Length: 509
Image 1 (spheres, helix red, strand yellow):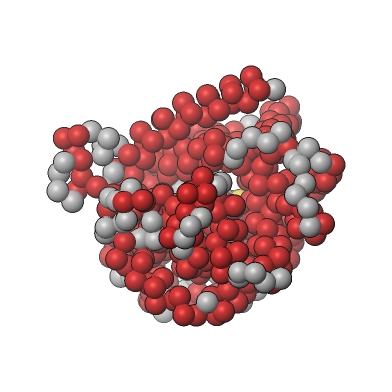
Image 2 (tube, rainbow, N blue to C red):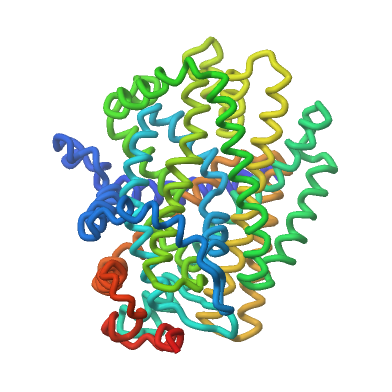
């Protein structure tokens, strides 16, 4: 077993080298890093934030102008085909609000300092417009399959590149690879959360080989398979229930911690804004460190620009493509500006790195770092056990809902490549095997860090595939946006977009 774990760590380490190359290029060249100011910005950061700024300007800050309107769009009713806008919103939120909202934010702060949060806010603000563009594109080019709508990056990528079946197949495969790279961490988090919850309830620290972990292992696999193979509508019924619960419980728990530590709030904002440009040496002491951590973990948290949220966006029975664009922009706001910020409040206000426990805190894993910060904010109180339980419960739900989304949309992409049953079943089995692998790594006591490296690589790899497509298809988004805000009252269709859109033309009838 030790040899197997060593091999896994070695492979993940090699993947991390490639991931760092994608994330850091060309800042890893001395000639570039020595350029004043510009040398702090990698190509990935320029591409992600730069695209968000470009789309924000071209769309005249639509994420601000339509922010209030986004809430009214959520209440639109479905017409019988596809999901309602709010069901689609919950489904995308189930995939977007994941363990990264706790682990990613905690990691960003522990590596880049409190200032990393400011860069997460910046990337999220401009990422809202990027999410608007990719989700609107997903709606424009969606297709109808029986009583559901399907679409997303692979679909609009094919249409935008001369209707190339090869392009559609490659992009579908890219999403499947993305999901496979993300599955281990989510499987690990799901089963470890169940074990930790049992430990909190019993008041003892259970070994990872305890029967509770094996029971959790079996439950997660059975429920994931039962739900995810039922199509987007079946998954949406589950996420309609779980997403509001996990979001409300987590936000309310964090708010209670903030209220009872009200006196620390001024220090929190001071730390964020002063260390965004000059972090303390303990966090790397470089502006580029805070910047890169904020953008990297911001992407992991809200997924704006990755194209990974475009499939649930396409499933919506929206009255206009831009309606779903507004909803997905709102999703980025909820994910990062609200939920991820709550995590940062706890980690930063806990300021464990300034206490006598600093050395131990830095040696901890990301979830223990977060829980240690929670304990610092509730010192010597029984309330700490309640908060720890609720946070761990939300953490497990975050991971589980991500698993559901990944499996369902992997199958949609597999169908895009081939409808051969043997091929579809092969993808299903492969997904399950990889999830099981992730869970087993938790049970045998492997560190999550190596698995998280796989997610880092998956995030930037698929973003590099998706963002060029957004520029290619932006003219259609712009036409849709102008029509959306013209208040003409005419339905959206082929005439408005300037290309054949039978799904939208048929919807008008």
